[in-house]
Every structure is written in structure tokens, then in C-alpha cells.
Length: 477
Ligand code: NAD
Image (cartoon, rainbow, N blue to C red; front, top):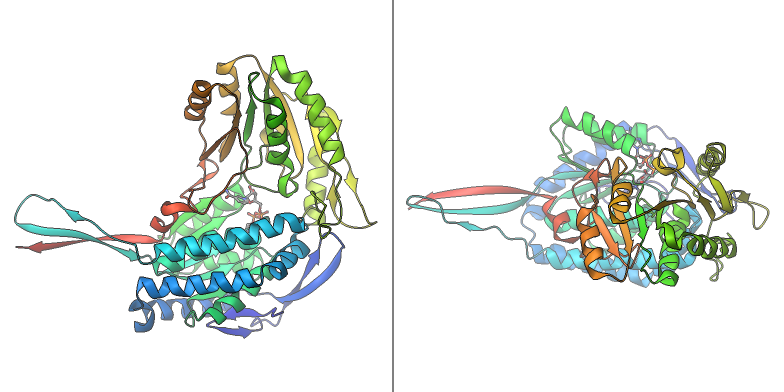
């Protein structure tokens, strides 16, 4: 596959000539050496994106035509779904089962926004006086998208599909751990017929290529998904050039089991909530809050389930937990597990690194009981398969515990009481609330955070709004 930078519909090595290795975390083997873009390459790509944005060809392209290009890209991707899913698994370590779901979501997201492209409309406004006043919705311009390694192509598509549908052009910087599927998608964009400069991919480091994109004066918006810490830095830097920003950041989401829940379903939901994607999921239900009267039952079932969920070869179709993305991430997760033990939480399942085939960066499905709210593992995002179980006495205490976090990305609620379910959903300060479900996503449902989990939304109509400016036009009658 192509491993150079994709700029202006051409493949180019980095100006510096540098390349960096991409490692398969399940085998510890180098998969590819990818061109390492830096500020000079970002500048070339941004110029191309700007020239395309200002060109007659792009400006005069109808929404319907842009939509047609995105539909074509969706068809081309769907035809190569298996190959792309395998590549995602190879670079990220997640199971093929998960990668297939995610690449399927990318296809859906492309189609969802392809459908929006010819439905972007303004309003007519009933103003005072003899005027005809209306609004136009216009694309913001050049968008820099910076994405993490956990859902590499999926989260990238949450940005490029609505941005291109809205008429923006884009420079995408994938995470340095996982640039391969974004580069493969560039081949698809080219084949689909996107004009030169509309979509560019610069692989490279965060502090080099990523930071250069955020500083660049000709980038009109940064759409970022990643850690809260880098999000804060981006917001500060973006202020210097008045860029618009959308930030999708970290989480420490509560999954609440009330005593009247269907406990079998709730335990299954708790497991999906934390172990799907090896827990490297921003919305992971990493704090399980259990009503005291059912705690013993829940812990017993959870520990049993976690012990059965053994990590294994992610390409095996029966594996349900793959390898963590990197050695560094494995070390981070193991150090949090050690902190949990040191601070007095009770380990009831997992807790160790694993090497199912004698290699790879795996961690066992881990459950801690008797976690107190002030413990590190109850407060900080671990981004791995580690569940912290806390208990509560009643509705008020459950909600108070759920909201006792700087984050506000997602939450789960398990109960058969419809009033309690909706009251809890209302009381929780988070961007997504799942009732008797966890980790459900759809291209049509907005996703994003409250509080330190960021602002702005991916997916749904709201994401399109994030790539548009409003122009108000006054006509004296
Ligand atoms: P990260 O913040 O380290 O990196 C994210 C991206 O930013 C990467 O492409 C990286 O190269 C780039 N980057 C790093 N430093 C930069 C800088 N100074 N300037 C510009 N770009 C820079 O995050 P990660 O470790 O890749 O991903 C894990 C984090 O992402 C977790 O905190 C997780 O919760 C969050 N996340 C959030 C969502 C969401 O939708 N809210 C989704 C997935 C992941």
C-alpha cells in the first residue's frame, strides 16, 4: 500500500525524507515505514486545500455532486471492507470482529453525510421594516482534522464526511500509531474522483505535524479528537489565529446499575461498556456504579465473565479482546492497575499483562471492587480494560456519584423503572446517555462531551453545523 503523504491528489515523501515505523501491537512486528510529515509538508497540504477551496471547480460544485462523490467513496470502501478491517486490526490490535463493525460504520457515515450534502439550507427571516432578509449557510473553509489511534478511520470519517459534504476542504492528521487506514482511504477518495486538494492526509507526530496544522494561519477550523490535555493546548494555540475548534476529549463514564434492573442484561452491558475495544474507548463505562443490594450478585457475574474473556489473536474470528495499541499504552494501563492495588481497591479479575502467542501488548480483562471515589482509578481515564466498581445506597447518591467527575462524555443506566430511567438521564451531565444499553452509535446521533470531555459534536445534523458559517443577507424592498 501507499505509505507517503497524500497532498493535492499525489503521493509524496516527506520534505525531510524522514519515515517512521508502524508496529502491529499483537505481533510486535513493523508493518510499514510511513513518511513523517512536518511543518513544511503541512504548509504544502494546507496551500493545496486552500487553493481547492477557492477554486471555481470546488465552489461551483453543487451539493448534489459532492454527495455523489461521497456515495461513490462509500461504495468503493464497502467493496474493500474486509481488507480495510484487516489493516485496522493490524495497526490497532483490536479484533477483526470489532474492525468490521467500525469500517461498516465508516461506510454508513459517508452515506449519511452524502445525503446531507444537497440539503444544507438557510432561513428567511421575519425582520422589522421593508426588507427581505435571509441566511446562507456557507462552508467554513480549510479544516484540519486531528484524530486518535483508538478508532482510526471511524473517527476520521466523523470529520471528513460532514466537512466535505458541507463544502469544506481538509487536511487530516491521523495518530502516528495508526496512519495506515487513513492513507488507504486517500486511495479511495482519489478513485472516487475528489478534486485535487479537497482531501489530504499528512501522517506524522502530534508535536510536529499536528501542532503545525493548529498554528497554520490558513486553517479555518481544527476538529480534534484525543486527550483532554492536548485538547487544552490546541484550544490555546488556535486562539492566536481565531480558529474555530471542536474538541472531543477524554471520559470517565459512569454505568449505573439500579437494583431493579435486568441484572443479566446489565452485567452484559457493563462488560461491553468497558471491554469492547479493549477499553480504549473514549466513552468506555469505566466506573460501574452498583446499588448496594445487588452488589454481591453483580460482582460475582462480572468477575466470572471477565475471566472468560481471555485476550487472543485479533485476527481469529472468535477472539473478543485483542492487544492494546502499543507497549507504552500497556505500561500505562498496568501502572494504573498497580495504583488501584496500592490504594486499597480489591482486584477480583485480571490485573496482568498477557502474551497469548508469546508476543504482543495485551492486558487481561480487569475488575476492581471496593473502589472509593477519591481513588486514582475512579477519577482518571485509564483507556484500557480496567473496570472500577463503586456502590451507592439510593437514587440521589447514585446520581451524585455519577456526576462526581471532571468529564461528561457518556453514561449508562440500567433499570426497569421508566420514570427513574428518564429522571436519571436528565440529571446526568454528559453528552450521551444510554438506557438499558451501552456503546450504541449511529451516524445520525450526535456524539460529544460536556465539561472536560470537550464541546461541539461529531455525527448527526449537528456535525454538519460545525463546518458551516451563517451569512445574513438584507435586501431593502
Ligand atoms: P492524544 O491526545 O495523545 O493524540 C490525539 C491526536 O493528537 C494524535 O493524532 C496526536 O498525534 C495528536 N497530537 C498530539 N500532540 C499534539 C499537539 N501538541 N498538537 C496537535 N496535535 C497533537 O490522544 P490519543 O492517545 O491518540 O487518544 C486517546 C485519547 O483520545 C483519550 O483521552 C480518549 O478519551 C480520547 N478520545 C476521545 C474521543 C471522543 O470522541 N471524545 C474518541 C476517541 C478518543
